[in-house]
Structures are given as C-alpha cells and as structure tokens.
Length: 618
Image (cartoon, rainbow, N blue to C red; front, side):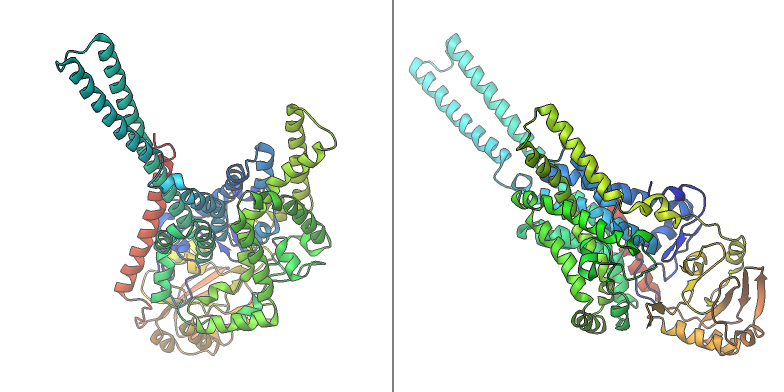
C-alpha cells in the first residue's frame, strides 16, 4: 500500500535514493573515497550482490522487507511487552508504519535508514530478553534440577544402605523394597533428565537471544545512523551486567563504517554550516518541538507529504499524541520506563538542537569531534521514540476499554468486540490525517528507467582514471526522474571512482563537502584548464550529462584537448590521456575495509541463522 508503485519495473531515483542496474566495488563504495562514509556498508552490499541480482530489485526488496519488519516488529513488541491482543497489535503496527517519519524519509530517499528504523523493535525485544534472569542466570531451573537430583541420589543411597543393613544380608530385598528402590531410581533418572533438558533449554535461549541482538545490530548497521539508533535502544535496555559484551558485539557490527572513518575522509571535520542547514524544522501550528513529537520535522520542506504543509498536520499530531498519552501510564506501570525516557529525549534533544544554543554546540562538535557530522541531521533520531509510541498506542486500547466498562459492564465476547472496535477507531485516526502516505507517498515514489546510453558509457570506461562529471554539482534534474532533484547516479553506475565535491545547497546554506581533490578538478573544468592539468589530478574520464541543468563554465575549452569516445543525446564521454595514478586508498586499506565488510556480512547472516534455529532449542 505504501510502496505499491515500486512493484513495476524500473529503479528508485528520488533525492538521496539512487538504485542502478549494477554497482561496482570502488574505493567510494568501500567508504575509502574523499567523501565521508555515510552509505557504508550499503554501497558495498549492492556492489557485491548486483552482478547476480539487479540492483533495482535489491533496493526494492530491502525497502519492502524493512517496512514489513517495522510493522511486524512493533506488533510483536506490543504482544510481549504489554500483552496486546490482535487488535492492539495492529494499532502498534499501523503507528510504526503510518507516520510522518516514514513518509518524510521515503520522500528524502533514505530507504536504507528505514532498515535501521525497522530493527529497533527487534533490538528492544532481544535486549530485554537477555536482561531477564532465566536466560543467563547461573541459578535457575537447571541448577535447581541438578541440586535436587544430587540430593535425591544421596537420600536414595542412604535408604538403600539402611535397608540392606536391617536385613543383615545386602541384596536380599523384599518385593516392596525392590519396587520402592525402582521407583526412586526412576524418579532420580527423570529428575536428572529434566535438569539436563532445562540447562540445554536455558543455554539455547541464551544463545538465541544474543544472536537475535547481533542480527538486529547488523541489520540496523546498513547505515551508520541506523547503527547508532540500534545501539542506543539495545544498550539502554540490556542492563549493566551485559552492557560490555553487547557493546563489543555492536562495535563489531560497525566495523565497515568505523574502519572507513579511520582510514578515509570520515575523520575530517565537517562544515559547521551543515548544522543549521540540517536542523529540525517546524511544521504548521506545531513549532519544532510539536513537529518532532508528532514524528515529523525533517529539515527539507520539499520532502514532506502535502498534508503536512497544512493545519491538518496539527490535527494529525494531536491525534497521535492523544493515543500515545492514553497508554503511557500502563507502559510505565509494566516497567518499560527506559523506552519512555528515550522517547522523550529523542524529541527534546533535536528540538534543543534547532535553537541558537543547540546549533552552536553542534557546530563545535562537527569541527572538533571526528565523525560528529553523523549528528547534524538530528531529526533522524526521533526514530528512537517509535518503540515507546507503539507500546503506548497498543496499551491505549485497553485503557479506553477499561474506562468504558466502568459504565457498561460487558461479557467476554463483549470485551473482544470492544477491543476490536477501539483498535479500528485508533487505526482510522492514525491513517486518515496522513492519506498521502499511500501509494508511494502520493505517487512521488515511482520507478524510473535510465536511457540506454548509460550502459554504453559503462562499456566505454575501460581504462584507469577517475571520472569527472559535468554539470557541476551533486544533484540532477533529468527529464526521466521527475521534478524533484536527485543525486547524480554516475558514482553508482560507473566502474571507476567518480569525483564528487560533496557540496550541498540546503535551505539557503552552502554546505561544503569533504572532496577537496574533486573541488579542485571541478574548478579546473569550469575554468577551461587543459587536459594535462586534469590528468595530473588523476582524472582519466570526463562525463557530460546533457539533459540536466547546471553550470558548465568554460569546460568546452578543456574538452577540445580530450578524446571523445561516446556520445548520444543524453550523455557524452571524453577520454583524458595519460592520467597520473592518484589512488585515495592503498591496497592495505582496501584489504582492511574488505575484511570489515566481510565481518559485518558474516555477523548478519550467522546471527540470523542462529537466532532462527534457536527459536525452539528443544
């Protein structure tokens, strides 16, 4: 219902979302390029799988599975944490899927962030399971069975000795004595078996819970931000005793982007202008705090459903918060206070971050703390409120029904009918104020088809050298991509590294990127520098994207000193002779990064398999 248009053929190309038929394992895909590793290990995963499975299908599959996991995970969380029946579980699933956060992130093209969002209920479930004493306690059913069996064995031995001594002839038991001894032995064996089974069951549950936590961490780690979201939920719920091993396992699942940050450009300071540009935004009648509390407030005013630009946004937020408020007391009483506190912090901190003081703190962080640029889009972190919100929404059904029964006592059948009615009402109140989330967020998410020239360009890029692209800039408006700006697909289509400055223009701010060499190359092209200057900078190819607006400067002077190898109405490819090798990464760095990606993949697949097999350890 949400991503229905993507069921057709074609590729997702909307703002930051870029899917292509095939990707390549370049330095940029490994996170070792000039830009910060914001799409690690996502890009490497697509590069590894797309030779076997079309990249467009991969992205659609990951997105659909993520949305399904978010809804199903919310339902399971509600059932396990607040004892929700089917109706309240559906309310929880609806809230997890049908909210402004999902709509706005889909419109912004953050499909991989939604994988981290979807993992949050599963992280909460696994972490809470590990915190329960029967999963990892040395004193439990198994130890009780072992001690009880040893005591029974001792008593049986003493009884046998006494009986034998009383008869004067060991071994000459009566039939009654034999039956009693036989019964005692059977009881001992049964208890011993019960103790062994209990210990095995406890060990299996423990392994399964750890595997589930690792799998959720790794799935969320498709992007660095998703990984941070999962860590906050998991480490907050797992308890002090298991926080250290959980933290170590989380760090292992972060290996791709942590190594890329250490080896690539991620450790460099970010432009402080980005803090203001990506701060949370107020929506009509709500202010920044109200927008965030309603799971909205993304920085890009263009990446919002139409209903969020009208006073309907206020109505939708009040209904959402009203439903959540009805269940807060019940969730608090059941002991899930950490999730409620996280939800409050996840709303308040980004709101404070949008104030002048918060922006000043953010600017200091991105300049002085390596990797702090991950925090500049602070509205992402409102996703942390989702687990608490879905629990409160599910509990609210019972709260309303309990209140109603005070005035009109009902039978058990009446309770079931009432629960279904309240759940249906709540689902309607969540969906109706946001109707444009349906069918690809009002039709904005629809597959596109690349011109055939892209495939021809890929075939002609058959020699070393980085690729420079014109027009200048990171974003494009192709005739086939719709009206919204889209990230240039060249870095994910071409087999060589594509130089990108990383510069963004957001809400009137010019946010500089980390690509210093790319900036030098772009300036040289716009000034019409000779091909020899570009070759000295490591450029072996120049790609002209003819159907998108943007500055070309005096680049025609540069092109006259190069060799045209392919052209059509959409694209033109030029060869720069004798480029100087200027690899951003060394072979050792590539091996380290590849090993980190393999570790992440092994943890994801191994943990998923183990968690599945250990669901029923008996």
